[in-house]
Amino acid sequence: MSASPSPVVSSGSAVSVPTQADLLAFVRRTAADSELIDSLPLDPEGRTWVRLEGPGGSEAWLIGWPPGTGTGWHDHAESVGAFLTASGELKENSLAARLPTDGWKTLELTEDVDRERRLPTGQGRAFGRHHVHEVLNESTEHHAISVHAYYPPLPQIRRYSRSGPILRLEQVERPEDWQ
Ligand SMILES: [Fe+2]
Image (cartoon, rainbow, N blue to C red; front, side, top):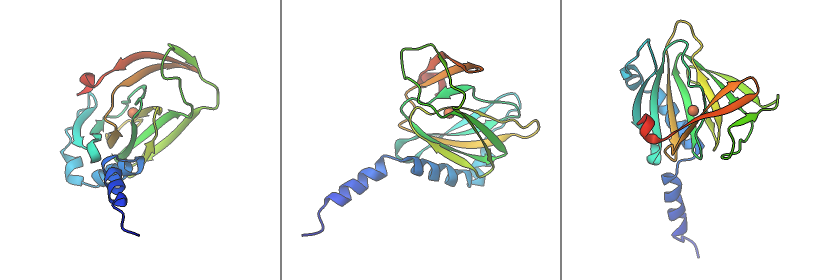
């Protein structure tokens, strides 16, 4: 016997739950839409955002970064995500360490957990659950624009301060704080 209906069912559910690869493909496709990228209002005083419709119910954003701006250290809880530079260049500092999710205020990081990568125009990355990073536009002259997607839609963002190896939990933001 062949042609069981189950492949159809699993194929349908694969479409409805976007993977990291799906999100990366989405941000790449979206960044190539020059009309959309050019429509983002830019402000020399601070970052600008436009909410986008991501694939499969994911949360997506177009973000404009004036020179010298950044996110500060944060994570994305249980969501996986992807982002890609559509214009200019961004830098990502990240931690190659899984942090305890709850029950702490400060952590001392070991020396080998810091990672950095440059994301010039057209470069992006996907990331898994509990990814901790900060994203910066280190240019002194040029705006950067990027496209981001998260699935599931972000339930919370934890924000950290960093002093050398010491990471301190400063704030937990909920969707009402950024939507
Ligand atoms: Fe982030």
